[in-house]
Image (cartoon, each protein chain N blue to C red):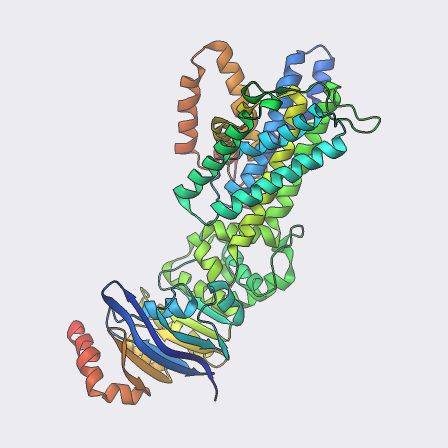
Length: 252
Length: 315
């Protein structure tokens, strides 16, 4: 399979801190690729550069065959590279359905339409309702987004990502702050999604990562120390030292 | 959810009826002064409606909105001074000049956020103020008297006070309808998304800068219309109409009436200007009373008067 995302020698530093260090990453179409690493490994910085929120100091990013290194955020999104946020980032004062409908609208050409009531356009509302149904939020469609619980916010995030019909999803800690039950539901949803999308998943929940990922890349201080299938990563001594051991220690 | 007989619906219908019937009351022996006062209120409400589009729906805290009042007004005043009296030239020029000014100011200021945006819009408006005050040919600081109101075809006569009142009222209602259509359209939802969470809007694929800029230009153009009306109402334009305190008045009207609501700016304009009129006839220090009243609204009624009356809904 051809690589959908290709990252070449990406580097980013903040003053003396190296957040991304000569990073190489290739993700073929259809793969769920997890990026793990201890706090401060540069996972969120990586996602920010992939989505266009941060500009790398050097290196290149290719998506679907074109060089997107210099493209702004909205252009990447238009190419089909969607991002969900670690800290829930929604339109809190708009309704749940409006949130998703905006994601649909983003892909429906320009929005210089000034006259027709967008809340009555089936081509915006119907796909939005479908996406809400897929994540199990149909009953909450008309509430303001601010009225939802944290777990529901994460579901809404996912519905928005789905509604924008992306080719690839950048998921930044979708399980953060979820209870065990909600986490399990999220894993089920992601398993469904990976059938039709390429996904880059940054996640701290190791159980979820090993349950879902086709391949895993381990970052430490912005460097890739290992990359491979879950079982290879689990048995990699270097990874155990740098990361999994530490996790265990924390859990103990 | 409020039904047709909610307090809010009754209050708004009563207000609209009162505005429509006011000239009848005056014809039947009411004070002529009321007609002059309410013509002014309606014109400024139109300016507040335009500000509400960017402030209430777009979250763009422009502190220089009165600049368009001046630009629209001076377009009419200067053309009249130069012997061009036809409204078919004066008004389009007023709108185009306001649109152009909004395009330039917006293109620069929308690259900034928060306090910087406020300060830049304020700075540009003050610059426009000083430029106009320096136009010696057109009266400079003293302003410019307009000897003839904008001329339109036969039955339309802006010098007829009742007719002028109804023209202003029709333009106000038209603008309110226009803004309502805009905010519920795809464009309007994009604008409200940008107010709510600009980063997220860009992340899902909206070039928000363009949408906000277009919104800024629409609001500026609409306010320019209000400026052309003021010039015709007072038969006089002066730099004072674009001074920064006037921009402040417009913000107060929007906040007092209810940001992001269709009728809010109208309610706010009526409330502020009537209060100003009534309080200033009671005491010279009327602002001592008005100030705390405003404070109460901001502290305890985030949706403004419109919000107090009933539900507040964005969009």
